[in-house]
Image (cartoon, rainbow, N blue to C red; front, side):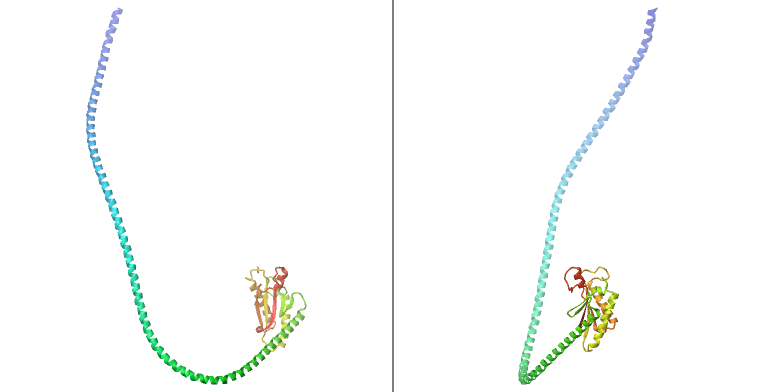
Amino acid sequence: MRLVRRSRRTLEIWPGFVDALATLLMVIIFVLLIFVLTQFFLSKALSGSEGANALLSQKLSALADQLSLEQKNEEGLHVNLAQLTQQTQAALNERNQLANDLATHKAQTAGIENQVADLNKKLSDATSQADKAKQDATAAQAAQTSLSQQIDSLKQELSKVASALDVSQKSNQEQKVKLDDLGQKLNLALADKVQEMKQYRSEFFGKLRKVLGDRPGIRIEGDRFILQSELLFATGSADLGTEGSVQINQLATTLKQLQQDIPKDVPWVLRVDGHTDKRPITNGKFPSNWELSAERAINVVRALAADGIPPDHLAAAGFGEFQPIDPAENEAAYAKNRRIELRLDQR
């Protein structure tokens, strides 16, 4: 029973195995068919690709030949271009040379024309000078004749003048004696006037000394009456202070008394000179010491005129720091140099 059963089982497995083998064989046949078809199509495609490659190779060879030909043409063009460039440069050089030659020729032509013009001008001038020389020669001959006549006439006049000169010399000697006498008289008169002015000056200064008193800041040096600026003005100012106005009033009174004794024909003048020290002015009102000294002198003159002194007998001058009495550089010297000077003088 067991053998029968085993034999039945074996018979049942074999048909399935046969079916599986048949199926596998069909698959292998199908795969082989596909592979053969694939090889066929690939061979055909490869054959077409080789034909295309051959065609492309032919075209590439033709292009290479054409490129080689173009390169040869280009080299020829480069050679032609170089030749043309050289020819062009040579032409330009030749043109520049011709332009330079033309400019030189023009300059030479202009120089020649100028020389010709100068020669023509010189010729014209020479002709004019020759004509003028002829005219001058004719005029010289006429002048020589006239001079001869004038010389004869002058000789006659000279003889007359010589005779008259003797008479004139005698008259001149007499006039010289008279002039010497007049000169001596004039010198004596001037000396008298000077002496007279010295007398009035001494009298004026003497009266001033009595009126103003012997006080510091007022002194007489030679022909100058000196008042220190501090007596009349504040530092850096040109306005008369109260004490300064009193001093000027006393000065005007003394001068009016002296004026009565001075004859009217004496041309006297009272000159007021303003002086400062050498230190620069710093208050900003006056640009320099010149303006300060001049303004002080003018204010003194105005005060004298206001007190009755005739303006035509007054004068003002500013000297700044340029006429010092003491050249030292200290406070005492600065104080001496800041001053108002009065001079009684002739106009």
